Image (cartoon, rainbow, N blue to C red; front, side, top):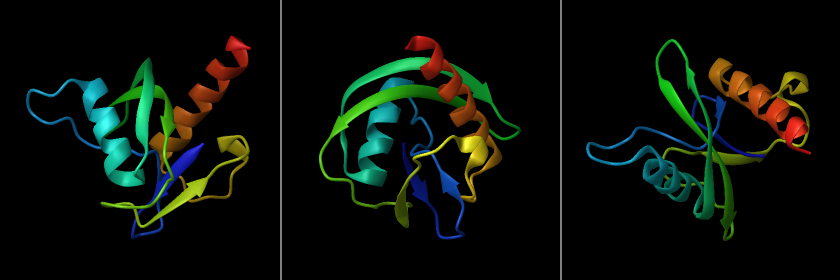
Amino acid sequence: MLLAGDQSGLVLLPGGGVDHGELPIAAAARELHEETGLVATSLQFLFHYESPTNLHHVYFCAAEGTPVAADDAECLVFLDQPAIESSLNLSPATRTILTRFEAWWQESD
């Protein structure tokens, strides 16, 4: 799982706001590219998650390219273990979304 670290050390899923008139799926592809340099080759909507500050549109994404931190991502981090076990400074929303994704992934096998 590719995550983005911000300047405060918080680790988040790549993402951001949906521009006026933009579809959430288009925003997901745009934000992925802006923050990581990757180009989405497929996006599958998984679920919505409402945190105290945002409504998150969560997509499963396949992408190509070489990941490079850009825009508001200070660094990129690969998470190779369950989010619940990670010592990364994950935002509460990111940890919750990843835990839900991991459950979905296990069920889909």
